[in-house]
Length: 300
Image: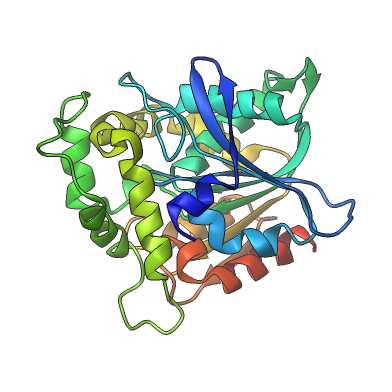
């Protein structure tokens, strides 16, 4: 699915000063299964999840959205961080009326989810003044232990740059970003990792939409939050009372699989599925295997 087609699947809703793109997909079959809330990662958007949406929405309502600064949501030139991303997520919960749901997160979304979990444990996460219930969590490839992450040269460069919008002359193109994204996946020729070229380009185009690629030095500041507040974010991931399952691409070169094993050791009741031969973007590389693993954990 290309980005234009994806844009037709959703609506833009007001959340604070932002216009947030939301794809709210009803379950294909009548069911009492909990809805799914999905939080995407850096630097892409909800379009990463288009390949798995048919499987995930077969028996569940699925709410996908683009965080402010990403994808098809508004892209203001301002500071960004985990707290503001969590605020936007809470706004989406209000807009969609989600008070009870399963939570699936990826990459930066893991950290945003960690902040939501911390707020929930403190009694600070509500919808229409009523407490939210997070029933089950699925955590996927994200640098929840930042000291173990193998950041790329491009990530180091962006993180070390000034917290300011790039000039148009030096901003990366969608084609360049598609190459960079492909390098975070399993090596070409790996039988179980087969990213579709259209899906890969859609992910890259979502970054560039509305000059979003120029905001990358601002958006990557989440790593500073990640570093400075790991005890809060990862502590909540490890300790929130809801059931936890982990689905991880084995060959992720950034959020290495050792992170998944470390989390499973610390949270001994967590289910763990390692997707062999899959890298950082399992929804694009192996949508069938990823969907089966997620639904297997949720339906268990």
